[in-house]
Image 1 (tube, helix red, strand yellow):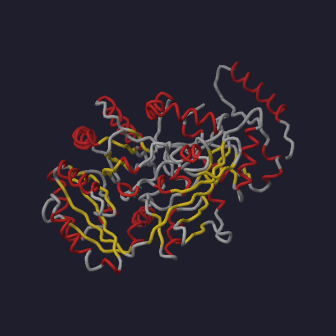
Image 2 (cartoon, rainbow, N blue to C red):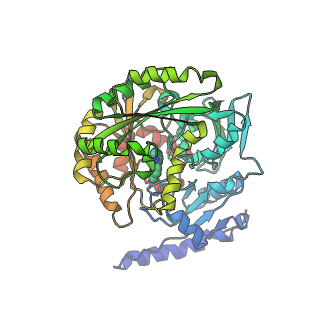
Image 3 (cartoon, protein in one colour):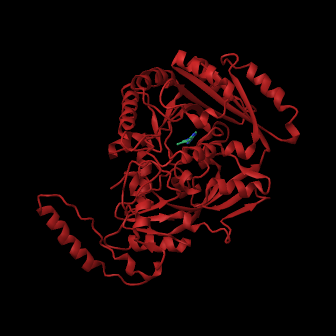
Length: 517
Ligand code: ZME
């Protein structure tokens, strides 16, 4: 290992800090107690180029700007373990954050004055970042792979992962550090419960293979662990035989309790639909152009007029997969299903698409927003898990209350229930206590000069939930203080802290989550 003179650098910094403390004007100079570029092992892979630094300072949220000192573009696991060890073994350690495709929305993958590790640089087509075992029904994938890459690869063999996110251009390591859920989750569990094995680099720079039987505590810690216990570098993802096509339905509701009653019944059936989500349609804001492409143009007027009349309506979205063997029964089955639902008669819509076109549906929206310059804009999102017992109060107070009053919400508002028993309490992800809880997502798009209004609405919603004692829990959480995190994890906070102490005692990893420090 190349020698670095930390002490002399540290001396300078100490003097700088003292000067800073003595100076009444707080022009804070960031400490750089490590002259990392002199470390030859990283030559070429560690960069301080402003283009790299600037790119790593922001994310999909576009509401934070947190500058790292350097960006590492690793080409091997060793590049990362070397860097973590360098920090861990140093007197003045620096922080490190793994960044995937940069789709966090509050700087969660940032590392102020530390190093951002660009996990995408590990993905190498020639080296084979995705290896499928046909007999084992699993895929071993580099954590920097996008889910769309995993899907394309496994589909070549007629196989597919079973649990998804809505958007597929996210990295495997990123979604597994959070949870990863979508309309399949009520049935298969989130992505974190569909993983058989992980390779994880801990905050001590040690790499470990782990599973529910091997280093199990690290396995459960890392899943949903918000990057606090290690950097996931490989995941073994469970596969199943891929369906060929999807019957994709939408049913519109005026009455929220009818809507949730149908949703809750459908997620309780074991042999029912393969996918279930739901959304709120509001009578204001810019029209959700990309979403309306689902509906036949000839029906836009009557849908819009129903929204205008009722101000808030709801859309149940379900999918049944099928292939050659089930193509003759799927229609009958779905007809029976639609007859059992209490949507507004006449407001049922149906599409028949390929499996991949269904899974990749948000991509269509992305490309359309990109073409209009509406993609790289602020996304002050709020995602919540709301216990089933509170959801009607939530509808009344938030959708029909705060949201209508403020009249600013734009972008999809998703609402759908999931079964708690498909999650796993040994994992780090925080979820409500009730058997059924709802995912509520305000997937807002804003402008650079007005996003704060959306953020204020988010805080208003959070305060409403708090005051009503709803026990809602954030997903992709942001808490400005440790108090917030203690409440977030509730009785599981102690386990979280114990695991931090065990796997990242110097608190090097993922500082952008704002949990420790
Ligand atoms: C900014 C944007 C979000 C455009 C489409 N979306 C989405 N639409 C539907 N479901 C989503 C989603 N992003 C995550 N889930």
